[in-house]
Image: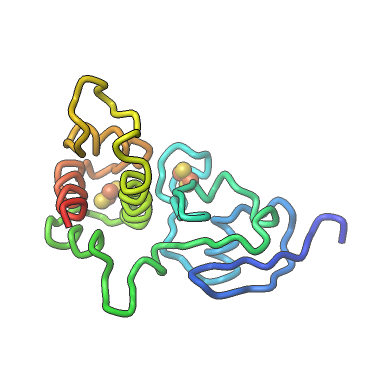
Length: 170
Ligand code: FES
Ligand code: FES
């Protein structure tokens, strides 16, 4: 009908031909239509980061994007972070550093951290740092600034920063 469109969503390397209501967010599409419930709905308003996924290799808040606009563009959710050899380094580091308590924010933290590390690898050292006088290195304040879009109600921040620091060192 007039309110829906056909779209090919490419999620974690798999194509899905769907008919979606035009108002469906990417978050609702992956959770409710594809059964990928790792991405979490915290606020549904772009404020908490628990829905973070990678789109075209960059982190985005999937609650703020309409799925029908993404025809053919690659999306990676937390379910797609691990590779054939097992967990991604950022996932392993979260376990090593006990970087979660309830775990609700964790899928978003993982996708955001992966996207952030990719940004750093891509943009560094031309990237703008939080402290312009600081040397171009991924300091803890820099990690906190770059991860500031992802809230954790359990306040596991010190361990999240430690995990990101370790993954960055690898
Ligand atoms: Fe998307 Fe909170 S659910 S930012
Ligand atoms: Fe509970 Fe982050 S681990 S919200």
